[in-house]
Length: 362
Image (cartoon, rainbow, N blue to C red; front, side):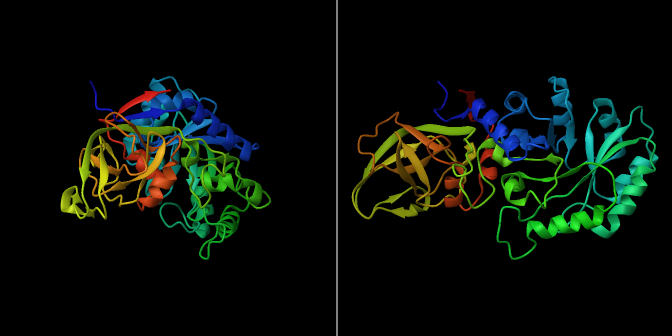
């Protein structure tokens, strides 16, 4: 029998969240972001869950090729673009779009000899300061790209740093939009600006934000990039991680639990041992008090998370027994709530899920 830890993927939730993103920006086409193996959900499931998307976006070349092999015929966008000249041949052969964010990539394109034209996304750095051309460099980069015979359509893109913070003191989304408009003034091509946070703020920003293509990621998986909860945004969890109680201990006041005896009982209590640890992808740094559900009742983690096990307080669940169902995140327990308690974000929890965790669909 396999260990009881299992990740259940909710395809209906993925489809629902995609529809929510489309409703937020009904005039825009949509790239569904499926990098990191569709945020830990699996590319094959993403193909079904996001079949209604206009395109798929990711960073991994081999996974982009795999999407074509799996039958995806709509556009595919490589968000980091290409890394060496040989990548351009793969892009041409598989019909992949790619981001262009530096002069070195333009030089590779100028030297390339390819059997088909490439559609590209020219990236502007409007303050994120990761990839892209500064606004005052953008028009020149665009002109240089346009002069290359093998370049087809050129879309214009940027990425927002603080779209999830409506009251951002530094670099609010409105300032990045202003910089983008200034740098792209007079240039043809569709625009791709909106990440999940901007999509969810589309109604608020509609007079300022013109994004012909949106690029939602985390919202498609039922988590939120901002201060509001996924429930407030009407998003549904696409992954539920569950396990079971595999052991119980009765301990007295003052006794410790787990490595380092980091937790000491204030009074006699029942401790449940759960088949889940950091080798399964659960965050080792999750502190005492991180929420879990046992038989549907909210309780919390106690002691240190170890490689294969974690301990929970059974005081609120006196009827718990060996085999009791434990929900670590997902339906009934929002992943963002767990992530916040652990000092991280829902993205990391999804992407860190280990290969040894059995995955099923409901």
